[in-house]
Every structure is written in structure tokens, then in C-alpha cells.
Length: 314
Image (cartoon, rainbow, N blue to C red; front, side, top):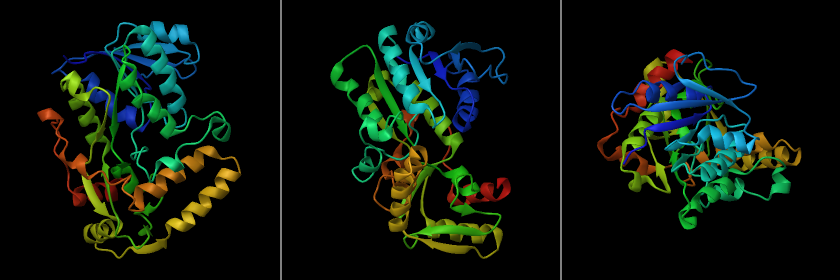
């Protein structure tokens, strides 16, 4: 049994811009899609023929009505609000009897032993922002609750294409600079956004039981920062400056940011630290074997291909 009637929360942003066309334009299978947009966010005009429902995520009863009848909810809500909204969607899904929810985690393995301490804390410390690790644990608990709603989380580690373009710092293709962490020899994995979209499409077609209450690692490419720098130099023919950065200095920065009350940036630093420091939270080697039980239709690109694209689009 597969999921065909979908409610998708979040219609703008990096993930939504890539994933929505893949799902909406799919013909085998054909999905019945309803887009949820924030009541203050307006309609996504890129898909005028797709049913769109404006919702206030804080209004539980209206949210239950909006998701009722769906096979699955896919959250593509932006990182600033996704943990809060994911929990609101979960409660609504449970009350509406929705079979599956795909939370908007899409990052490193936040439950890895080295990452979880940086990404969890009590509610008072995080103020109004539920911590990523705590939210992931709430979804994991669904397996024991045996309620109407189960979950599937895709874990892609880094958005490698946008990292290499310089979207998140560290890589500066135009300036020919790369911040090299701890010597640059630690390996990590990543996925381009098209690969994430193709992987989600594959998971939607897989046997429902095989993905039930699972955190699925997906990886397109695996490399070290030194290998990436070498690839940039090969593609451009130019020498890149390798700026040394230590994880210890990043930890100190995070402490100061946390103490200043900038929780969102502190969260970013927690992910940034553990993605590239060799701890394993960002090195999802098993994800390189993911094929969606044969439903993954997009071939993995090489590091050189992704670097070449980054140079063109930076």
C-alpha cells in the first residue's frame, strides 16, 4: 500500500521549491496533493491548479479539518518554525487519523550520540523553540504508542549543492576560499536538493510497512573538505585558500551565542560543528546504499559534477 493522498505543509523555501514540482508533476504514481499555507503567507502561485488551504497552525481544530482524509502529511516548513509546526501537525494527524507524517528534519543525524547533546535541552533553556533532538525523540516514540499515526524521517546530512555554492558560509567559490575544519580530512556525506526530492518520491512508493517509524539515511556523495577543495581547484584551474578552523573555536563561539540568547544561531552552530568534525553525525555512509527499493530514479552525481555546478551557480 502506498500513499497517494498527500497534505504538504510549507510551499516556499529551498526544500519546497525542489520537492513540490517533483511530487505534483509525478504521473507514476499520481498524487492527490493539498498544500497548506500559513494564513499570513499567501498562496503559492507556482501551482495555481493545486488545492491550497490557508491555515493557522496554532488553531488545532482547523488544522485537524485541513489534514483529515489524507494518507500522509509531508512537512517542508522552513527551519525557523519547523519543529513547532511539526509537533502541531503530528497532533492534528493523530486526531484526524492520518497514517503517516514526514517531519521536516532534513539535516544531520540529530540523534547521533555526538550531536544529540548539542541539539537538546529543557524547554526553559530553549525558550519557545523545541529542540531538534527532543522533537526527533517524540516522533521515535510513535513506534511504541501504536497509535493511528506513524512517521518516516529522511536524514540527508548536508545540502551539499547549496553548501558548495556558499549559501551557508564556509565555502566561498567566488573568493576562492574554503574554511577547512580540523585539518580537512574528516569525511561527511551530503545530498543535492534534487536527490532529496527524488529520494522522497521513492520512499512514497515503497511498501508502507518497510518505512514505518523509520529514520532513513540518504546520501549522494561522500568527501572530505580537502577533497572538495582539490575538486574546486581542478574544476576552476585556480588555487583556493584553505582557511584553518578548529572545532574547539566553534564550540566556544556557540557557548557565547547561546549565552546571548540567540537560540536559532546556536542551533545552527550545533549542526555546523557536528556535520564536519568527523564525529559521524554528518557522515551517513549507509545512505550511499539507499535505492528506495528500486524506486529511486535519479542517479547519484560525482563530487566533480556537483562542484562544477557550484562554480556556475555561485
